[in-house]
Length: 183
Image 1 (cartoon, one colour):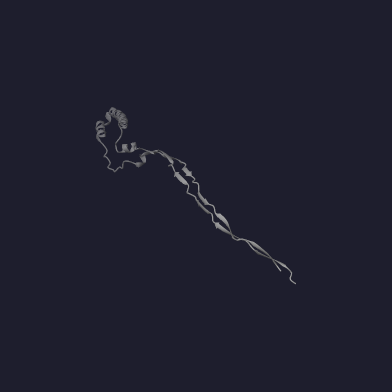
Image 2 (cartoon, helix red, strand yellow; image 1 turned 30 degrees about the vertical axis):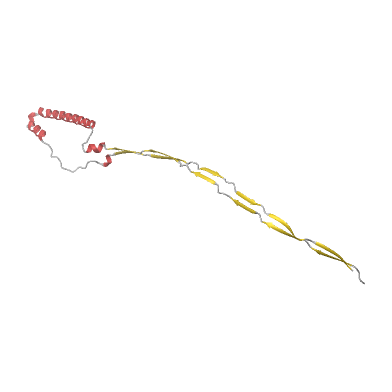
């Protein structure tokens, strides 16, 4: 016996996709940078050292005396010789008062004319220990004032180009249903 049958036949639908990829371009330009470093301010002040040498005594040793010193020494020498002369005259007067004791006048003449022999000797002049020194130390003051750098930075925006992608849907095969009765 033949039983009628229902036969269904289907064809699936097929969809195709056509994709255009997006394009993205990003470029970041470098920042514009200006740097300037001012020089530091340098201030220096000095006090000169001073050296004072007093060679008065050394100069006096080699008979290079000042006028004032020479005058004072000559005045003192004159006073000394006057006192010695007065003493000598007084002594001679005392001796002459005793003239009865013998040849006093000959003794006085002999004392006045006799001079001792001068000694010959080498003498070094200019003793360095007689130099008087006075030193005033100097100073050096340094003051440095640093200057801050001048920074001028400008940020550049990125360059961004974007082309969006596309998706196209294409029907590659349509779906179908065939229904058939078979007897």
